[in-house]
Image (cartoon, rainbow, N blue to C red; front, side, top):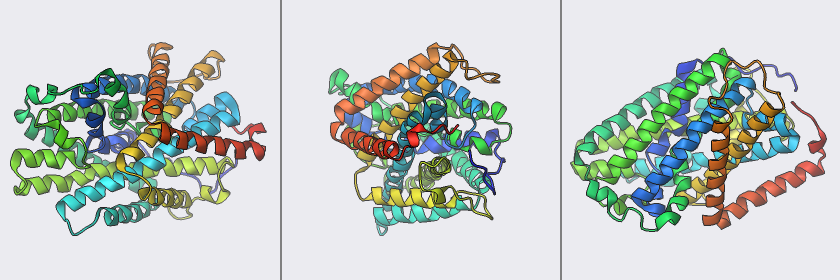
Length: 434
């Protein structure tokens, strides 16, 4: 591995990791998940969410062992490369980049929808483009500065969701929640899986800042476990109380379900409704900002290993951040804004996630079997059951996403084959990097 000068700074502590873990994901509690109602109904989506929650519990505990064993900015790429060589690493890197680069456009569109809800004079696309420009600049300023910013907006976002639950829950009616709860039967459960994944998608991005963590063997597990616990509570509470508020069909196809829910309770003319929508932007900002951290570190790591153009691994001499990686990810994201709707971008991002989860769990099982992972301060509990359950559920989600979204899946896997062919043609599959 090449030596970098200047290098990434080790400045992150558990509070930063908690805020990054929650911040990466918390926009999923604000929007996007409600498309799962359109796919499977309230009961069908609840079942899908329980399945996915079990997936993430078992996955994160297993993934934490990989992250503490190999604290590398490439995250899943580094784990798969260590286990299966360059081709394994490339598959994991491609899947991770797809997940992290395509999730922000969906959030940017939701940001635009929230602002447009508040101030109709601003178009959705104007706000989405402006978000990329502003938050790329903030990320370039430094990881500690980014982490402090993420911590502030994440705390505000968690507080707001708690307030939302408190305001809406007295108006919950079980009859609303169960009415037409499984309109498509068991098929709807499987169709809703990618939107359940959206509740948690991105939490594994903590692995991408592992090189910037103080005492990673001790602090990474704390950040992951606290972050996942917070997200599980918020996801289930928000989904259930919102589903029992009114006819859920009215909320199943919009990018601002929470402000709309508050307006049902308080009235659209109520000043608190607009205030709520305004601070609701913090949840979207936290995830948008955090995912930028994730994809920039993945691009940086892949470039450092020679899988992407070398200039993308340049470190800014003053701010010590991968500025070209941040800019490159933003360019791809801006292009993606014009190519699909929110639900389609979510599905492709979820597809990249489950492919990455699958190869990561295979990497853990293989390296444990071959005794490659040694002297670890963190071991996966209930091994091998946790990684096996995570692997099985990842495969179930993968098959379901492909089955119900064949066209989008063809796009994803065609891109993977194209990248693999270039990789093999250049002879990089023969190299041992890590």
